[in-house]
Amino acid sequence: MNSWKETRMAKARFGVALLLAAWLSLPGVAGAQATPAASTEPDQPTDMLVPPTSASDFTSSQLDSILAGDWRAPKNRARDVYRHPKATLQFFGVRPDRTVIEITPGGGWYAEILAPLLHDDGHYIAAEKMPTADSEARSDDSALRRKFAADPAHYGNARIVEFDPKAPVFGPPDSADLVLTFRNVHNWVMADTAPAMFKAFFAVLRPGGVLGVVDHRADEGASLESVKGSGYLPTRYVVKLATEAGFTLDESSEINANPKDTRDYPKGVWTLPPTLTLGEQDRSKYLAIGESDRMTLRFTKPAAPAASTTP
Image (tube, rainbow, N blue to C red; front, side, top):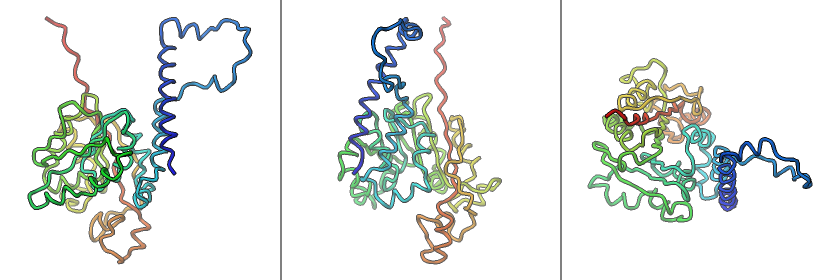
């Protein structure tokens, strides 16, 4: 069983804690609390003195509950050791009350985490590539759509939007708090649509919003041309794509680093798990390496300048 009910009860307790914190911040209240008058009442139980749970602690506990959820496919949970979803989402600043757009989520590895997390107080939007004429029928029966339809308790509030990679639009301008993409940028680079995608991310994010990027990392100093088609990308090139679209690099992380990855495989990054393109050939060798070495980058859309008061 999962602890989804316990999580929702915790959310109610968190709301009470926020109200208490707001009351304590009122003028005069904080000072009164700092120097309480002598009381003739018996000592309060020690658990009454515990400070309210912080928003970050609350999100952490919610993520723990969701990661243990029995709705997650076992094969997906087995990838947690390589993809570090809790640390990654915390690094990007994901919270349950945010509007989050995930770009091309595929079968929904992260959707199994993000959609339930945002179900009650936030918004999860999955952005899928618009089908071409010959794939339109398959789109209506996609794995992600089936997943959402089969479990409304966890995915009932999730949305799917379609976009044209050559002229992408993900929603109204300034409407999202976060745009996240996992292991997709290399595909856009190969298709020559990456600049348009990053500009569209910038447009849909509100000022101060976050773009979170995870992708396969090429060797330091490798040129784009030398690795194009391998699935790996130079970090500086991804930073260039984002900054040219208007973003500022806020921070990078080694959360998803893998020093065992030598990046010199017959079929590029797809030689490694989970794809294992070579099948049984050297399978144990590639399983021992694990998934690829990955960059984890957090960009921000600069806040809008303050309105001028000059006549």
